[in-house]
Structure formats: structure tokens, C-alpha cells
Image (tube, rainbow, N blue to C red):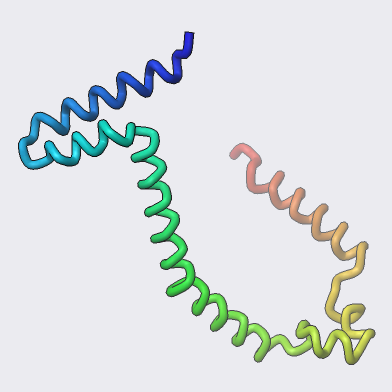
Length: 118
């Protein structure tokens, strides 16, 4: 018994019947019946991925490049050029292991204090 195939078959039939009830969408219903519902959903996913890619390349990438320029302008010690020229720089800017451990203990203590019942 293929329950998934049967569900898709019934879902396709129901969607096509609902679309056929509207006379303006009869051609769309015939197209949907011809390509099946799962292929139609795959085509919608491709369209959504294309829109997300366009939004990412047109809006998010320029904003990220702007933030990178601001960061490199104000934090010169973290740039790759300075790290390769001055090998001591990572020791100055990177926290030591003990500092990381203190921060972990402090964050756990803050969590306990904030979650205390009143």
C-alpha cells in the first residue's frame, strides 16, 4: 500500500476540482492535472529560490560589503594584512584561554541569576 502516492493523487484531484469550479482558471487546472501537483510544487520552489537569490544578490550582499568596509576601517588590527605583517597582533587581540573560561563561567552565573524565582 503506497499511502503517500494515494494522498498525492487525492490532493491533486481536490485541487484540480477546486480550480475547475472557477471558469477563469480552467486552463490552469488542465495544466496542473497534466504536470501533477508535485511537479507544480517543485516549479514553485524553483521560483521561490530564484526570488531569494535575487534579493540576496541585490540587497543583502551590498549591505554586507558595506558592513565589511566599516569593520575594516575601524578595526585595523583584525585585518589579514596586519595579522600577516605583525605576528604578535593575534596575541594582543585574541583572548587567552583563561579569559574564555572566565567568560563561560560568568555567562553561566548570569543565566542562573536571571532565572532565579522571585
